[in-house]
Image (cartoon, rainbow, N blue to C red):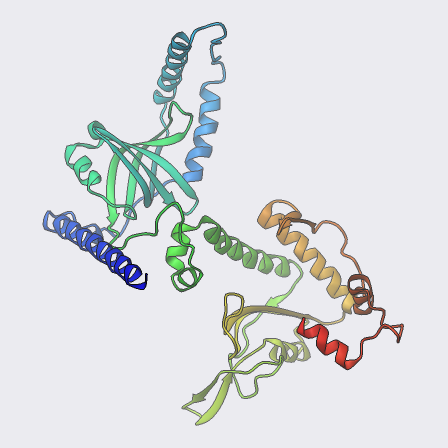
Length: 392
């Protein structure tokens, strides 16, 4: 059984190596023919995929405002098909008379060649869009090159938007430019990149194959930007504090250690942002915050990283009720700005950040959610019971 598995693995590796070899040979042929994609350093992009759809729908509504779709009630299948086909051609003629020129760029994730015309899907930052590639539209040489292209190649596409008979908004290509040749084979499209270790070690592949991962990166950036906007509106000052410190305080963690050659001194990478921010408060900066990297020389898994980002803020002349109000307002603001609503769903649970947060002490929280009343000595677990509970 082990022998069979090894044979299969070796065969798969040989297949991959052959595919990689073929791709490099294709690149070499392009370069020899003066079509080296890697010499192209700029491409004029006018739209992303979602903008193409939004603009087309708006344009279509304006041009077809008075158009009425004919009824096919009472017609047999052939007659109904003819009526709908004529209606589509009429609509298409109206739209083609006032086309929306577009220029997009992205990675080809799917290709279907059908003689003199083909379809492909181009994926950019905002999603995917179908592209119709016809030999008569782009020319014989360009079409021949397109047929030899591979999944993963990056193309620039110039043309105009239109709607197919199935209703899908697509781009009719009038010019195709190979901007970058993919020399690696992407994971199989139906399953994507599912190996957890590979996803974290090859984030670039994860971003190509998993739309959810890309959206997390985009939303994280939006959240950080809106945190800065919110705090700026509250008169907070953003600062940067030292990363190399003589005493890594502010949290309980094992620090990374390094050596400062100029001072001949051993130093540590910070494990928290707290201490220097508090010194700034002492110095008279009444409201300060920092979004910065911290380093903890501890375990590594998919939920814990030795380096990660913290956000800490400190405000003078307030109490914990003031900090509660600040936190509540900030979360509501972020939800509305990033998601468009104060209501989000997390792991199937609906959370409304627009509602006032519950004000509850730790003792009350333990009583409410764990059923233990610390005011009743009979309910307080002894050390042995507490240790047993912690192991569970």
